[in-house]
Length: 366
Image (spheres, rainbow, N blue to C red):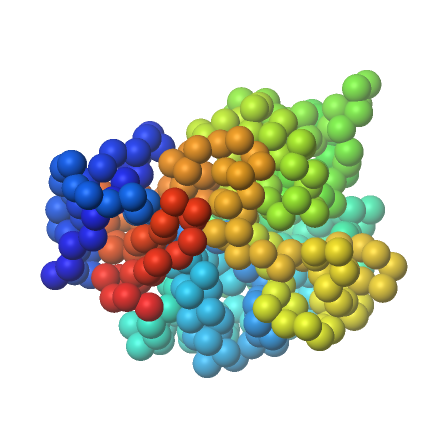
């Protein structure tokens, strides 16, 4: 049993000083006038991790995914979705099998929990590929059945304007898979139809989607409007200008926004890597293909929290909601992403500069 003290985050994002006692799970949450200037945050949950420190989810085996879990935990991310991108279906199935084996070994690994797979494609718009390969499929028939059969699939990004997309969204939702609108050329009405069919997130808002226009507001206007679908943003100041992050925050607030890193294997390295449809390297704060197309971020989730607090103008507690409790809510998890008795003891201890002092995963200090 262990106890830590500081200003901890409550469910509404407010802070209160006290102490947390925990083993593998949180045993007691006790408000008290303790002498500590530290913050206690729930462990961060990243819904979009393509890789990091030279490890690419698309080519990693179970052992490498375990190593990736350790790297993420040391950065303050205590749970994540391993993310696969547009590829031939047989390759996607191999990637999912490796993720499944890594999940089976999770009790042996002292790192971030792999919550499942985020499949970003192949059901995306050929006109909004970003760095993805042009291997796009319609979400119906055999391709859809094979995707539906992936055991660890938890989140799927698709373009709602594709033929069959709305029916596919309903089927995926019925199977317990969350659907996110992304890599899309959808109009406002098409995006709204996607939400009506069950879509519950927008993948990396602003990136790889029809831009906002005052006469054809498109998918971004649907993401700005109140709805059950979270607006997920990449808070690195590169994928999205800080002023646009502020705009997204003003429109959706703490209840409707999620932070994701969308980090790739180049994060934490100084080399090059095959990402999507070409070779990429780090240029001006992000991974980029030779033609300048952004191919993913190199930030940690905690980097994103710091940016949103320091430049985005939100509070530490609100940032914790965006990076921990909202991702957990999207996935239907009731024992992660918040500091409550009975929840997983995935906790971060930070100083006033939001520098990590300690990370606890399932009650054990990293």
